[in-house]
Image (cartoon, rainbow, N blue to C red):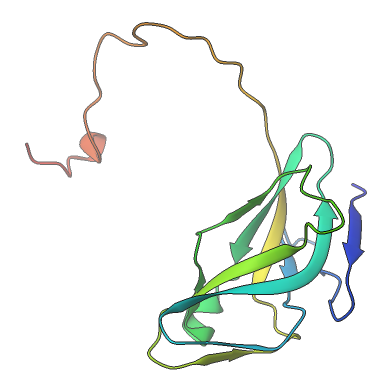
Amino acid sequence: MKVKISHLIGSTLPKYQTADSAGFDISPSVDSVIAPESIAIIPTGLIIEAPPGYFLMISARSSLSVKKGLMLANGIGIIDRDFAGPNDEIKLLLYNFTQQPVEIKSSERLAQGIFVPFATAEWEEVGQIRPIDRGGIGHSGGYIKE
């Protein structure tokens, strides 16, 4: 699949680490220090236009929390196809959950991007969908005691 990408000065083109990698690694475009128990917006220098019928999902690399004490503050990022204008740089929202400042370098692989296909729903309003309730959170696994 061909994907349009623009990268700003100081950024690194994303790279798949192996031939079978589902996600490509994303690095920050600048060195930064994230204060303890705070969120920082980290630029990547990347503008990526997902192909038609896809969005770009940004997720943390599995080592981010263990090695750096960081996590994506929003869990995952969803980059819509139309977020690809000249100022639509992809940025990482990183939360430092440690008691110490965390230093990150522009060469570090912090997140990964995955192209995910999607469908757009057409809503059909109805009064009731099903006549029987399934129950609450964890109901089918017996976790909720009522």
